[in-house]
Image (cartoon, rainbow, N blue to C red; front, side, top):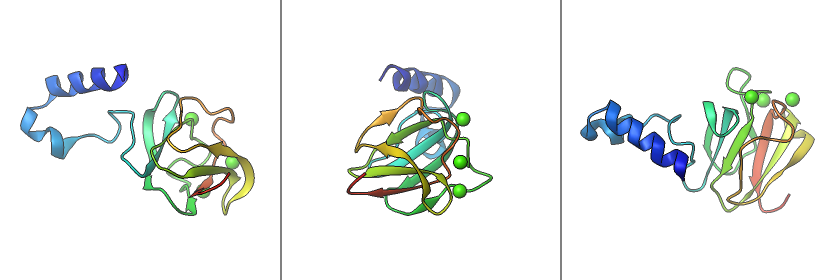
Length: 120
Ligand SMILES: [Ca+2]
Ligand SMILES: [Ca+2]
Ligand SMILES: [Ca+2]
């Protein structure tokens, strides 16, 4: 929570309050919306937010938007995220439990596709 509070304070200082809702930058808060899964380029939910999608899938991470670059994940859904090294859900990497946040993946910069489902 400390990070979110600090980011909010920076935002409040940088932009007029009225524009905050419309202009919320996807990168700023380090948290994902309910029922969504988000993935970032760097550790601790920083850098480009390459993935911000409703849980489900399968999802192919686009080659220009995070293939082999994902380092941190926020799973804000009730589902398990199953991660794969290659496109088309091949090359099993591991699972992210419902509502689990991983600030630094144990297999950094390898994921290329994933799916959200009821089991690992
Ligand atoms: Ca991909
Ligand atoms: Ca990375
Ligand atoms: Ca890979």
